[in-house]
Image (cartoon, rainbow, N blue to C red):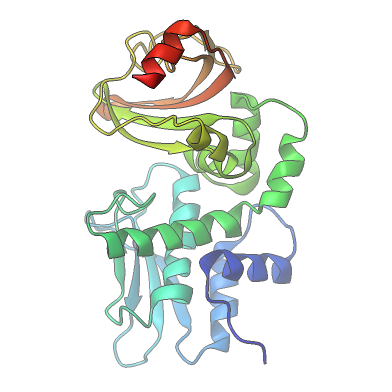
Length: 276
Ligand SMILES: [Zn+2]
């Protein structure tokens, strides 16, 4: 028998290969079936109407088996699917570390946690979920040579049964374009997720800084098409124009934008400010 993978991405790839490319991925069926190869399988996946978590991995008393629970109050089916995959990731990668199991809230999904170890574990569960639900090769085929737009994002979210936010984060993980997802509340940035090309350019939006005044996110009632709004230099970046797509604006004053940056323009002013 071959050894089990050590990394969450490798686990997910192994399962994707075993189950073939049928989308959306049936997380429930895979978790229940695959875990039977272990002495402590997942016995049940069920709703649990509690306010304290979105998803949980719980040891069952006496039997030594496990249950995955999810909160039926989660508003979108995409979030439920991602939550189930996240908990299945904890089961595969972390159950020996935490015999008492996991309770994961919205905070821990997408790795916004307090301590470093906690954050790493939550990020690993997210990575597993992302790889299992949205294999990169298939996602690349869906995007093809097209430019990212809200229609394409909706297509991906629908194909993989995930939220548009999860689909956008996955795109950022493999695109060669400089782009970032920016999540803000009440006009202030909470967190951002960047593509490799954006990191190379040094694009970063610190938690707690105000949204750019002329951005869509700061003016979410502005109407935009599937390609978003073209914004000039000095809105999202001093060195490039940007195209901002409005993924989400909802209750609690939260906004989620996908920002794709254009060519960089260097002139004497930007040189000066970079050098100083
Ligand atoms: Zn978790």
